[in-house]
Image 1: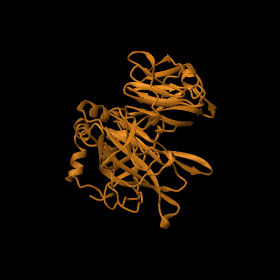
Image 2: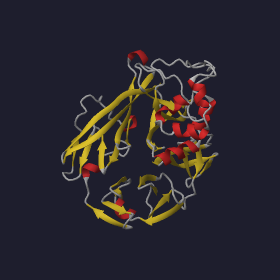
Image 3: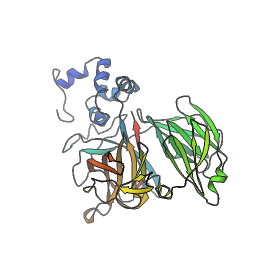
Image 4: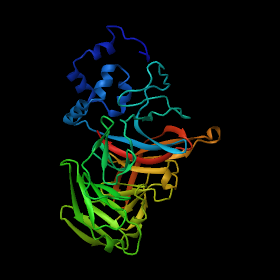
Length: 389
């Protein structure tokens, strides 16, 4: 059946859509989330079911939750930044030709023709979200939610309000308010909790537990850690919250205490945005245009082998992001479109499985590497997340 054509009463599609909702939910829950934008085009009933929270509750009960990629891009609009969300999905056809009367829009996804120089099997499609009159910056993903601390809400300054995007329904919700006002906060995720540290000297870290919806805090020897430095570098790894300044200290939540640890210079140089952690191993491009991993025993960076066919990555942190994508590395980067499209640039994505073969060797296997989106040259890459839905 082509887009826009009516189904005959006895067509397979028409027969499927007349199944009871419970049975349809059970079937849809077993399908990868990557195909939901395509399935949402089948009928209004499918669109409604795919946009429902009942579907994701069924997926959880059946053990079919999976990791999904979201990218946050900034588009220039009359000298203002117009940020938009996109998510990864499968291309519906090798040569899509959507019916203009139908459009490629659903309450949960916005699927439209995206022109690239090559037809990819994977696409980043726009995600319409509920109206949210606020200036915000996404900081961390926990489960199916992406959390942000808002700077402005309805034109008023607000550094203590936390909102989150529910990636199941693509709607915004407000989390309980923080105890303290935070200016330029530093935020990390550890063991399913949100850690918020003021960007300037502060003696405490606030911790938000999404399960209990409660804030807690822990004292932090920030002055001792920061020393003469004006900024901090942090990692959440191996069950600990690490802070690097003049010295390095780690907070272990299970022990509820701070410990001084040996300063690892090599690890400090790994930019948070250019790195991801998988099974307590830090992977990063480390400004070298190739992927490396940090050997904590040898205290040096080693090349991730087996990636000879991976294109050279950009050095600039503003053009590259890495995330832990269900135990694999997802790399997202931008590249100029070439002479024929000087006003465009391409967003590339690669998914890489990793395997440790010895104490000093980790191999990567490229599962796929494609152009997933073409955008105006003025567009900027803001954030990249993997959520579980």
